[in-house]
Length: 146
Image 1 (cartoon, rainbow, N blue to C red):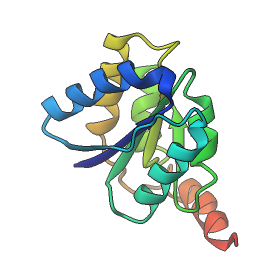
Image 2: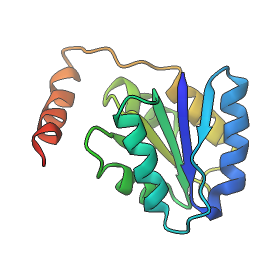
Image 3: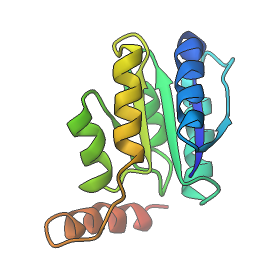
């Protein structure tokens, strides 16, 4: 898979370790930085690239993962989830068809971060009776926005 990553300056070392891990799994990673202390800038840039189909998925980092999640979700076609345990990482993909996950470098340990990312990347959304119509509802609403 083609993965885009980005972060704020506080999460740089965490992102680098996660980037090396994702590459070790055989994925192609493009790093959008960031030296920009305004994490929204890199989150939006990465989310636009994912929404445009330039990347299969995105992984964003800040202190909590919440800020980059909020910024990414402002982009039409980007669906970001802040994940904190393996179950939420899997469900972000399996139930919600999220194309971006976010993690907090100040609240997620390095080993857990790797487990979360691996769990997310190993899943693929399959449209089904339980989740499909729920995903359709927010995607349809998103596509109507200007």
